Length: 314
Image (cartoon, rainbow, N blue to C red; front, top):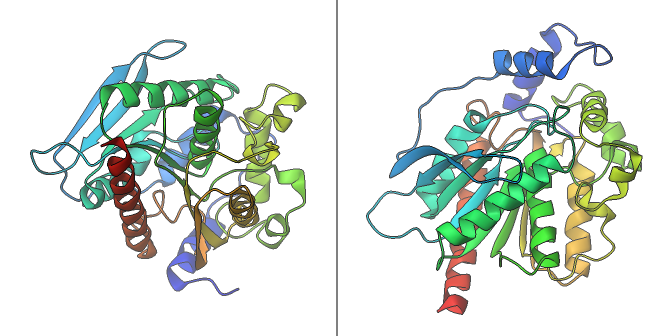
């Protein structure tokens, strides 16, 4: 393992920052710290329009940001996207550049979902919000293919949405786009949790902290709608593109989930970015040039999946 120089620079800056006491920090303090270190702003790729609105949810209105591609025609499909942040931090702004890039390059509409956060709203609040958004998007964009996607905890929620869509009879999904997804638990014993436990941007300690904030109790940790690798059967879920970073505590669970999907007969592609770290897709896309490559890969997968699904719809 050799870190890419750009990833090494991010890691070095993180190491120079003041240490965080995970045993005493609150979710509010964690969010403030994440916002302070986040590098927001443009430049942005041009899209047709960006609109903030609310949609109905199971516990009140859900804020979403809708990106429409350039041109006057209908989008090729719609991607319901979930930001990362361990179910505790993150916002619609976190993935602004990534959503615009994928929208512009794929010709798809993107519905980015501001789901409820833990610990104020523990499992299954986020999953309920996300699935409500998926159902809303299926109705709002009726007649075009639908996909789900997300990064980190957002990848978890996308995988869960795919499971729920299978289990609840729809809506039909053309693709699940899982970027550095959370699919297992820190205590599951995967080697990447030891190899990359500290000093690679996302730490084991941070993941353990997130897993103390999100579930209501230990029983939730065996629920596949929280931990997708706990599912007994993955047959029948949507085709998957899984993008993972080599130097990430979550690396091995992405590989394991891809293998389980293949074994279940689900068309699956796993792409691993050697020498890169967690957050390479959206969170760090101003710092890592590999982000543009990953955005292009995601956009091509959406174009292909939507083209195939459109033939079936027709």
